[in-house]
Length: 140
Image (cartoon, rainbow, N blue to C red; front, side, top):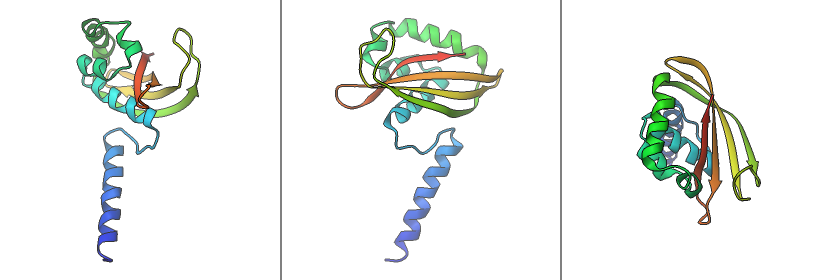
């Protein structure tokens, strides 16, 4: 019985270290978890997957094909992601241009192969089923 506890603790520690090594952090915030999953697809320039993971409000404003082109145009010149750190999270109930609801606006400080410093803003929206999906993305 005593040998199981250290093994379980080691497993949790390995998962935490793996998440950090992959550019993530262990988080209990479901909005941030949704944003990180979405960003992982964006890092791979997988427009189809980012569009699939996006909120309906996002999908209604741009087709999957248009989004793939926009994502590629914005991210390809930057090169590979080197690091990304969550800088802030602001939970809001009202944002310009979208219906009132539950939103999390996250800003990440990022470093890319060809851009030493960038700020990525990801807005996640809580859906009627309680899940969180990305409703907006901006990189500067």
